[in-house]
Length: 328
Image (cartoon, rainbow, N blue to C red; front, top):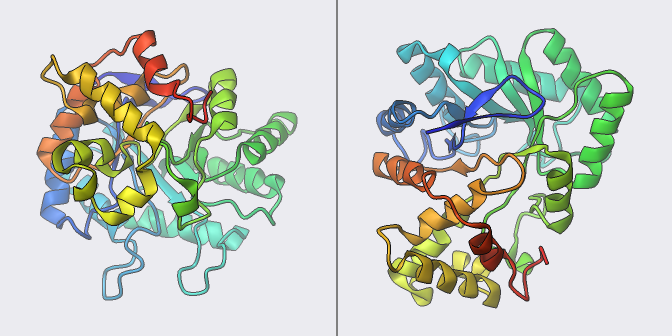
């Protein structure tokens, strides 16, 4: 798997980032270890997790279970210096549903993450949500302080609006400090039906965001980059066979048209529709490192095979330029 430099940093990351949302939850510790081993063996080095993953599960040892699984694996394998480790903090308190955006709240989560992950530093620390009641100055000053303390190397944002990202990085520039090096939005080839988005704090990479990243060159590390396997599930089970929630979220004229184009493309190859959906994310005019939530070793290998596909500019335009596409 080839590597890419995240602009504005010295981080040389694999072109895919391994998502770990299921680690310690639907995936056992052993299965999680096996998946990370396979990812590293195939040339991957970029892992994504979050302080909040697993904290909704009650019981001894369940708090931040995802981070703890990764921490145990890193210690056992002894390869911390070979891994680009990203985790997210500043998340919502699941008991009170209040933003943990104060200096005390963010630093407490960061310190807990360092303990869970059994490491002295985080390579890229993401702000999981944006509390717009806080000034961008508050965030930039706080994160730069953590950089100086050696707790984090670089930082990014997840589920922030483009307007707030621009404001934050402008303040960082004029104040002579570091700004966000990457954005982690919700983004995939499948365009969602926004009326069925239950979590309104999730930020989709819309036309404004796409244009911003095209002009600025700031990296994107999108989550749900394969839309929970939407195209693959249609291909296997048909529209009526996919889960109701997924159907409500993604079934629309635009996505069905895209599916047909992908199907035509792979009809004379040994590729799968999901391969093309992931390859599309890798063929962008700005650095894009999709997060892939693999739940088996075979899915790790399938995702890596997709990185070998080079879509032509004509094919990319065909996939994007649909009358109902928001990128037109």
